[in-house]
Image (cartoon, rainbow, N blue to C red; front, side):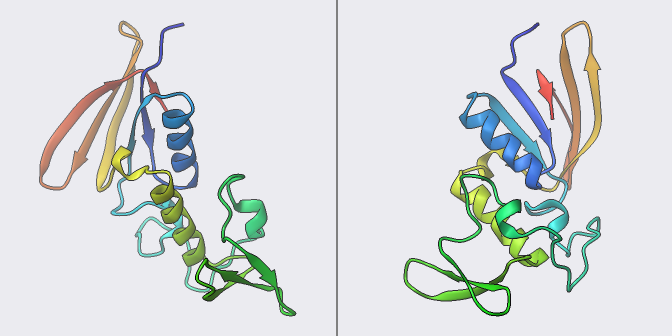
Length: 161
């Protein structure tokens, strides 16, 4: 087994953000996240042409099941008679959050997660991975990326997620 220090992650959606946070802050690795869209949140951003979401979409899982264990969807949730919850911020202002959140609420949650855990410095937005090849002789992944207005870039990583 070879040592792992430098890790590439493809995608800044829910899984990519969780992987980045844990690899960076639990294992103290050098992490780079490549996201081809202009923002984090992956498929939850319906303005992303690759998203399959639609305007009135709600998740099929309650927010308490979807949320990361140490990062709740809201600070305080109060159920009302209609299966909705009122999210109350520290200043007491409330905002409606259904038990089954909308795509916009999930998108906002993922953006807050990335901000809260300072993941943005690890993320290269508008960057497409065009090739990923494992090089046996060096035990490394050779990642080729492109981004608008820049020539292709090749980097090597110890691991690929």
